Image (cartoon, one colour):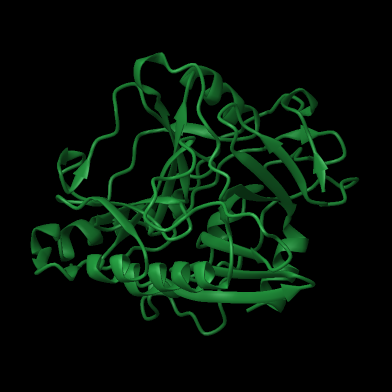
Length: 363
């Protein structure tokens, strides 16, 4: 794996293209979401145990977006026609934020983290693999594959069964003796504010039973997961329930420039509820926060200014980092490459062919 500095990345040529068919599909689907069960007024709490909603998730309707970056030995994403996978929505997209990777300390913490996500948020185990001493488990809310799944029929099949979903990768190394997080503690670092999940319903008692440390459960749920990853649960509708990773930034402007360099675009802050950040069920982020993503409807990042101009943030050691799948240039090898953002968050790039082969073999 190569480690690259920001200086090694070349300038980006970001090209926005519109596609009328994609836009019409997207807006008609969003309108259907808003009018069919609007309503998250239909959301209700069932005691301490669960939060339910009649809302259905929409498709992962990704828009055509940009040509991404060139870098030393990594890639030269030269053309917006270099698609990532074969999903129609990704036809003019050559980079995709695929998920987040988390380290767990031991078998019990791995099992607890799986129970936390599956029983607390209705996540699914998507795939697993063991290579040497390392065991990996990927969880999410729908297929990761960057193609239309076999048997998926528009207008008939659930959009939760469509491709392109993000995932949470849990990594357990049996040879490691490092204790990164102890149950019940605060998060062991503060550069990651939270991973936001927007789901039809979550179960607070199951989070607690799995070892989650509830910080706030008024309206939404803020909880430190059994691995030490802060998670925010929202009851609502999102194209992909893995909505975003919120990152604490000493200098939001510098972080925004960094992410622009690797292909992220600043966009309007997304909300999973019609109230759009005006209630405790889905509060608005702090003033001067910046939301960015590589495509309008996929997982994104929320850059949050630190309080009182803190001079630094502490990296959370349980967070290995974000994962981006990209299309290399003709002379690129698609090898894994890693850089680090100004808040100490690692970002790993993986070539699309390598990702698709790995994803298919490990289902």
